[in-house]
Length: 435
Image (cartoon, rainbow, N blue to C red; front, side, top):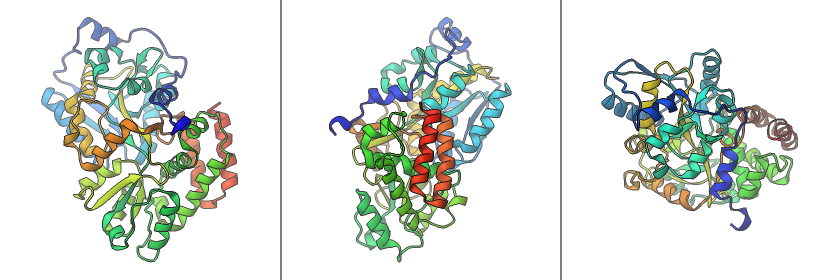
């Protein structure tokens, strides 16, 4: 890839950049971990409230697997599964904000690695570092330093990664492609050609569920990666290149073309509703993160038999990272139980149980690839060699305020399809939040 290749070190230096204003020193959790050797206080009872947006098939199943492990180890603890439906956490984040600002945090909550946590609740002094928990569990030996860096700031670790998702994935109904003699496309030209060929064959060749608009933002970041490569992607999402650049306008033009082939009800559908269209055969393709695989397998679809996967068009050799984590809020009502939950999230047993259901690959390097399906094994291998870039849509590359603004702008774009106006408005968001 020449000078386009973005190393893991460059990748995490952006995503884990210090947000500033972080309180230094040992938290109560760190103090307990330091004084109690390698174990958190025993949790014999009480509650454990886990806040997430994992309600769809696959992701909910994966969470349930980790709950089983926790209950096996801490049978006396009542688990409160506090879920708020809405893909990418758009609804959940609003509820969490009210609770955190009101001094009523859950015991632990799902959050994307990087700026989504560091530039918000860490910066606001609402989180306790889990540095001593990390050390006591020996995670330096099993979780890559690249991922540790993304969840670290000012010398402390703030959350534990439970998985690694791929954001730039193209999913397809194998029967539809086989019946129409279509090879899974690798270039944008081939993809648009395939959509055109299928327009008269299926109801909507490209499935889209754009409720909340983050799915359209994913199309944008994947297309920017396809048009400009990893180096330009890095530059534009760090405010060092302009969103009025030809690469961004090309990315928008590609989305404009894709919209000619999508289902008309997409603004009312979630990501899982779009995947349901592939299962029903009313659509052939969907561009979505690999949590889609968890949804497909939960519906008894078999990888590489009923459905297949490839990098999103134009992004072969590139990997958009989406990473889920859990941290420890200050004032967690059941702190001891929360610390033990964090340990389960980072454990080999927890990640081996969670990730095959969720559709993701483990953050730990010591989980056997043999327990995963062929598509996951493919992604595990590509993660080791591809150029990595962090997702902006899912909070790693950019502050949440920027991603939220882009969601709104892309919601307008699917209506007006104005490439130049949208590029200009995206640059205004960059000037406000990325400079």
